[in-house]
Amino acid sequence: MKQTILITGAGKRLGKLLAEHYLGCGYRVIAHFNTVNELDEHPDLVTLQANLSSQSDVAQLCNSLKQYAPFCGVIHNASCFVADGVAAQNNTDFQDHFQQHFSVHVYAPMMITEALSGLWDESSWMTVISDIYSEIPNERFSVYCASKAALQNWALSMAQRLSPQVRTNIIQPGPIQFLPEHSEAYRQMVLSQSLIKQELGYQAIIDACDYLAGSQAVCGNVMRVDGGRFVANRYDQTFNN
Image 1 (cartoon, rainbow, N blue to C red):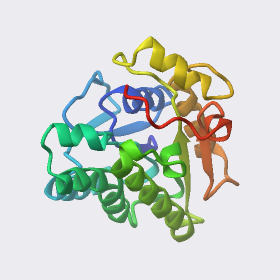
Image 2 (tube, rainbow, N blue to C red):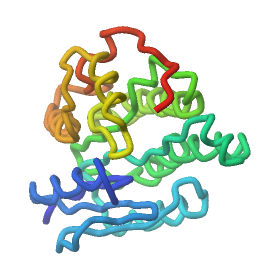
Image 3 (tube, rainbow, N blue to C red):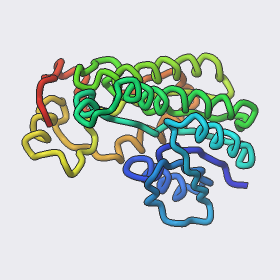
């Protein structure tokens, strides 16, 4: 019987590549997605749709997990990233802006992990994707930063609570993969604020996930995968792109 991994936010970008990677490694993958699912069909792939900012959707997702147990690994990857100013420009109520980020980054991972109680393999792992903003916040993204900091703190609590059966670790990505809308000037500015000064791509996060999944002695670790940006400087928070 194949081992099973749950990945949230697996419909596109990093989550999609993580799902494809672990399918290629021989796992059965339970892939959650919100609205977009770019994954091709695969005999070992199960896709589950849920809006993680909806408590009813989260409850439905949690109730569906038991049939796929036991789980050898979980990657909490789902994310919401909206600047405070953009939310205001879109006439989004600040409470809704706050609720969306904290639902996706804190409430949903907590409820999913609670639902997995008793559904883990004897030796399992959980990896939580946080952000370097958890420790070096940016005023333009205050709600996002606060929710990611809360996610990280909760994950450290889970490292205490779930060990030794489940090893919980955290990955703090930095500017690993630029998006098409990022200008060349923005890209060069961001890269100039790292030590490696290269766009490392999503593979850097996949490699980190593999390391944490396979390292039996690593638990409660916060791994920065940011090209050294965390220690390079305290970057300019005023740019507009």
